[in-house]
Length: 173
Image (cartoon, rainbow, N blue to C red; front, side, top):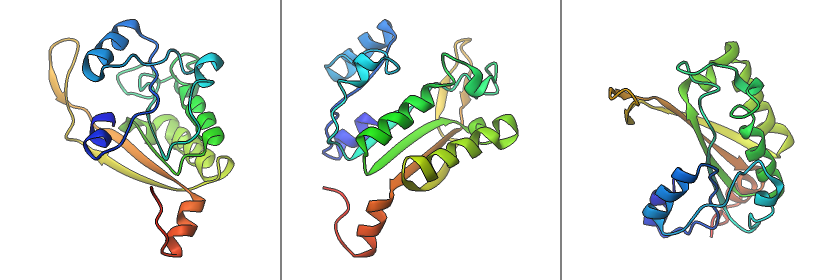
């Protein structure tokens, strides 16, 4: 997400990562160190509230066919989705770009996806969810195998943006 938006003139105003090795890699790639664990209030308190687009990928292991498939019952990896939702509700970005494994849509007989849609279509006052599946992301697995790793991406659009768009007003600054 970051590279794509920077290449288009965007500016990253906050990033979060709890793993120390991943933080070092992030620093090598971008020149800044991400804030810590996004589940901690001390980290959430550092998030600015004046940004237009929130980009997030929450851990996929809880929803992946390759993982334990505990979903939201996985207290470590399965609940980060709800932290992203709380950040969106508080900061109210115009757009959110979220991604996860393709199995998110079919996990638990589709109930996980229904919960995702319910949350963003209701409580957070976001109105539309668009889903795109992309099978072109090549991945090198830990065992050295190469493969295609389908992802599910969804765009959440604030209802106020849709109202402005219907009046032909600019919707992003």
